[in-house]
Amino acid sequence: MTTKLSAQTLDAISATASVPGYRRSDLTAGIVHFGVGNFHRAHQAVYLDDLFATGSDHDWALVGAGVREADEAMRQKLMEQDWLTTIVEQEADASSARVTGAMIDYLRPGDSAAVIDRLADPAIRIVSLTITEGGYYIDPASQTFDPAHPDIAYDAAQMDAPKTAFGLILAGLLRRRHFNIRPFTVMSCDNIPGNGHVTENAVVGLAHLVDPALADWVRANVAFPNGMVDRITPATSDREKTLLADNFGIEDNWPVFCESFKQWVLEDNFPAGRPALEKVGVQFVRDVAPYEHMKIRILNGGHATIAYPAALLDIHFVHDAMNNRMVWDFLAKVENDEIIPVVPPVPDTNLDDYFALCQRRFANPKIGDTTRRLALDGSNRQPKFIIPSALDRVTAGQSVTGLALVSALWCRYCYGTTDSGAVIEPNDPSWDRLTAQAKLAKDNPKAWLAMTDIYGDLAPHPTFITAFSHALTTLWSIGTRATLQRYLADQL
Image (cartoon, rainbow, N blue to C red; front, side, top):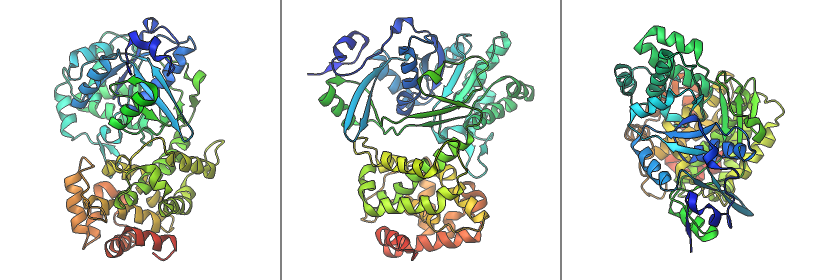
């Protein structure tokens, strides 16, 4: 017997899960959030739920927003359960469920007028985003905003009804400027180096297409704090829904399963005000860069390191990959030999201890994270998580045998079949292009590095070309397993 999640059933659900420790009727909106996916609901929404439970800051509730067709499906599912979400935190030896209620509304995607109206509301003092690494219109090679993208060009010509998150944000700022309402702060919650700067460049870049004076006004008046976010949160499938029903008796349209660990480090730059998130564990610092650098290079780079060899070996779950001694050793060698040595020091943090924590988190058998999720969108993730470490090393005259192998494994994955011959379904917005290049690279590895928009300054570097070419040729010659064995034996 299960109980359908809703505001009316919280008393019944409280028998197996914790429920909001505050009256949701007391909440009022203070934040509009673009991208109400699993990570946002497991991270920012959880911190706010914790804060509201202390009795504080009930005027900082969330209003969801989205710009993709898939966002409407999420909106419908959450509306059916009064915007509530069940979060299941899982560790190897324990699982617990909680219902969060920090979101009180979700604007209909495509209704630009309604979104802009809400963004212009003086009560909204923060606009936040979790739109994934690929949603910022960044040129992969230069890692700068691409003003020529068709979506951006459309919004620049249609500011009365823009389609992108950045167009809507700019339209909201325009409305507030017109009515002399203080600008809201724009806060990215995505895994991008300098995410505040990247977001600022996107909004300012779009504004410049509309009116250079508007771009200057945004630069001078709108805050874009940098932040580092972290919590392993896999996609929801029928597996998670069934586990929730069987273990906790709760029927949720779109539950979120995640690890118990979470971290949020924020630059304290909120001139329009902010919730007192320091009360619930958020670190406010002057400079986020060391923390995000560590996380992106070691954790996200680690994910990229295990994703492709595991997938090519037909390993479905991440914890199973970590239980494979060869994959475990491959991750450890790449991290210890090539990634961690080029990560600058982080305040009050031991990088070796941080990597050990990452290993334990990756190996958590309860999460059910998949290698396919880790391998998603490599064309946007590799330039952020792997290529910068390789570039740092070749620039310093250091070996890149391991990082070049990681890149070669990505290329081999994009060929579209595993070592056993199983078909790899498209797993990147640029899949067709990547597959075409991977097929050319089978006989001519340099064809893969011809994607200079992805590899940037690393593409022509002789040290990387040699290491990558040898790794890819070896993968095709003897397969993933034997190639990893050679690398681990220092024979690659």
